[in-house]
Length: 83
Image: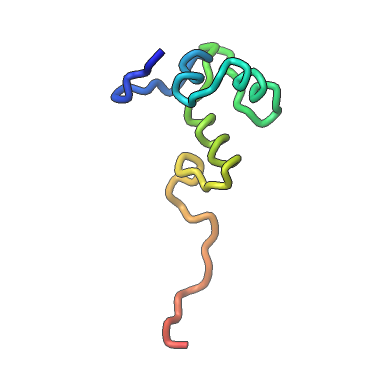
């Protein structure tokens, strides 16, 4: 199944998740078995794609733009270039 990149749904079926993230059925089953992988939404029985992106960003040690919202994680002191 190939998803049209012009329209990527926010909530995805397991088949769509596997296609989008390049996962085998076994890999997705193993990820679902961890307590950190995003669960399916009970109302729509689909998984939030953005939460899966954040999950993979965290695993890769990246600060996800989806999670950070463009706000720095910490504000350090004022820059002083005269020292």
